[in-house]
Image (cartoon, rainbow, N blue to C red; front, side):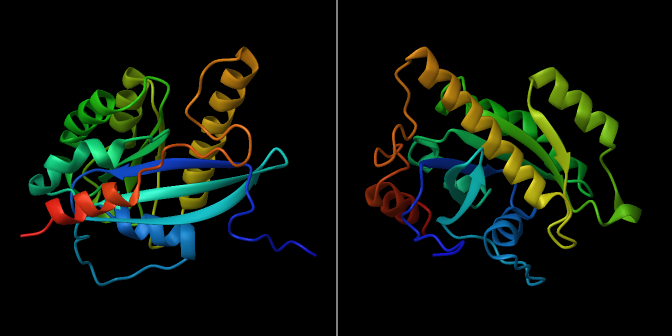
Length: 215
């Protein structure tokens, strides 16, 4: 059969959310990882979108369902549906706009208020290709990540720098958390075994977000 696998042929399904201010590049990170595409035309995501991609971790096929929503305040009312069932998060700021880094603390609090304590979090400093415009020092972001016990990477969706690594690292760490809980016999939300899906959010969740994100 070769390397081809049907879209529903996977061992684990993990929901990962992208959060951060509007315009930091969340949608381009998503499209770069799932479709290897980048758009120079910046347009705000309305409501919510998600895309999927499967990767292999330790001989298991892990399907990531990655959710992306707009960072504007008016979408805040839909956070519970957006975060529900998430086992990983990419917390994104724009390395050329310091205010987006300042807001990370607020995003992190919201994330932790709405998710399980075992969620895997990666802080991402995007647009690292714009070196001459850098406003956030790598050392400062690294120190924040260490303080908050999150992972950290700098990425460029434009140059495809570290995008694959960031998503793969998050999914690998989630897999390790899930495997450990399974070994301990814990009651875990994740997909154990194949065929039992994590609660990645129903169509009602998506509808609620889109409805809430409109007008």
